[in-house]
Amino acid sequence: MQVARGRHPVAERGPLDPAPSRPVRDRYDPYRTSMANRLIVIAACFFLPWQLVRLPQNNLSVSDILFASACVILLLSGKLRVDVFGKLTLFWIGGLALMLGALLVSSLVSGDPDRWMPVAAQYLFALLVIPMVLRSCDRLTLQTAVTAFVVAVAISQLIGLLIIQFLTYDQIAPYVGQTVLSGNGRLGTLTGEPNSNGAVCVYALIMLLHCTMDRRMPIRVAVVCGGLIIAGLIASASFSAVASGVLAISLFLVLGRFANFVRFAVPMALFAVAYVWAGGPLPKPFEERVVAAIATGDMDKAGTFTGRTHLVAEAWQMANDNMLIGLGTDRYREVNPEGLPVHNLHLLVLNEGGAVASLGLSAMLISMGLTSLLIWRNHRLDGAACAAITLAFLFYTMSIPHMFARIWIGPALIVFALAFARYERATRLDSSLMVGSRSARDAQRATE
Image (cartoon, rainbow, N blue to C red; front, side):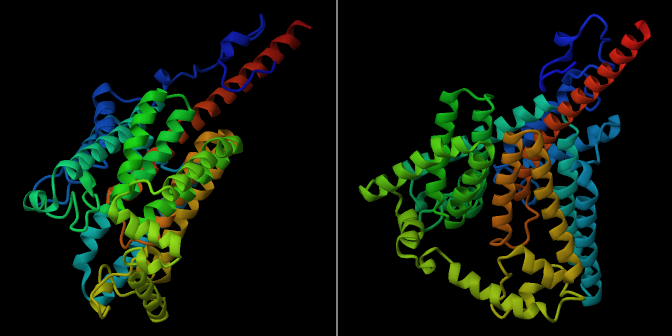
């Protein structure tokens, strides 16, 4: 008996076929949690891009508190999963242990271990606690969480665009500083900083395309959310966001189905080129930082690109002296003449924790890439989304220092958790069909 993948086996059973040994519906998922905890996780994903919504005088956002609450509930109920990356969980957890362990040893040798504690705690929360919480959720909860994240980013951009339209920097700065709107007109909105706002816009666009092609979001809602997110991305005037967005979305469309690339990417590119060539209105910061850099090929116009390149070259030279034992956690800025960290996570971890810490970081990134491939072989759209969001995250690791802020890795973990939920459901279905087919053959032989 052959059954098409994705169809329920009950509809295809013959007279001698027994019922599946185990129902393959989400409501029978052993990791399905209570309604209250599902709502907490969805709310945590909704507030994830709203980094300004936090406790005063603390580095804990509302999203952090909600994720921590969900973790405690799952732990007490015995439903907290530790297989955060499926078959490659060992690579993920082992890589995290190597990175944090090497940073600890380097901090102890440097005589300043106190700095390691807060950094390690935030990395553990972002790279271990949050993925465990998300992996403990069922597929429907994670689908809603993805939609909640996209809508939250769209609302955040709407708020920011309204502020730009009706208020000036001088009017709003006394209340929120340079977080919502920078002095040069770049939009940070509720994310709190233009570059990170551009990053969440890129993540949200990947999720939005995934939702739309998977038919989980009405097209009208998708168009409204997409328009707001693209407008916010442009208003953030982040060259890194534009570059990573173009690369990641192109990869998603190609891996998802090449026809989608021709259908969506080519018309969008032609429209963007025609709009700019025709002199369509664009925010001044975007014209100065992004359009000018692309038009002239001069990366000096793309913000602080030249300064970051200088820091990267300097970090490469310093790495030769820090291969075995690093400088210690958060000590790179002390030895740097300008007092700045290198805007490259790989080089920063290499210099502060040594080669072992760099190996741990590489193991985690490799596990994301291999997991994307594994899922893509089972479900092209999910695998394409994982690969695209991994590429966007990898792009930012080469332009941002320490990335323990949940806003950088959190969106990627949501996408991976959703892909794993569908992958495991399909695997359980295939297993049930194999058991049913084997039982049918045994029953047929018994009647012969």
